[in-house]
View 1 (tube, rainbow, N blue to C red):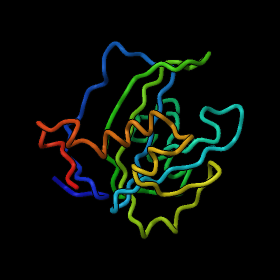
View 2 (cartoon, helix red, strand yellow):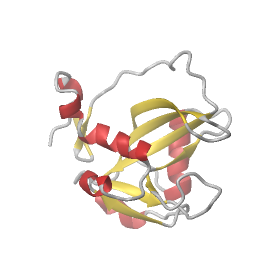
View 3 (tube, rainbow, N blue to C red):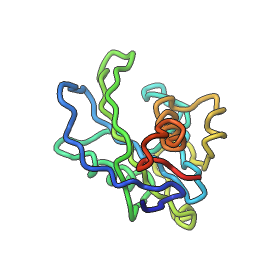
Length: 173
């Protein structure tokens, strides 16, 4: 199992799209993780027309027409941070329904994206009000953080406790 960003990256086999779960919106999210196991999060703008205004969240966005999730993830990282990662690994996928009027059912793919510490000074943030590195423990006490992103962060960091019988997916400390 290869070590990337402080977390082993198990070679997950490709999955076919889940059947029967159509969505109104398709999104991708990057778990940008440094080798010392910190997550790079963005502070979302305080705009009333966006979801989660003023919250900390992972970087990401929606798929453009005809785009695959992999293509969208790389595009979003380039647009938002001018970052072209050497690695980008499918990690977690979910379909959920939101309490809003439009685009209620969302299919979201989270990617594990190693972020070397020496790359951070070269990042250029083009969306949001700020960015910062957080340990999982620090993120857990933020008063305003995306609950879905926090869930994915916890899933990554706590795999050994969550799935103790699946040694091939365990993350060593």
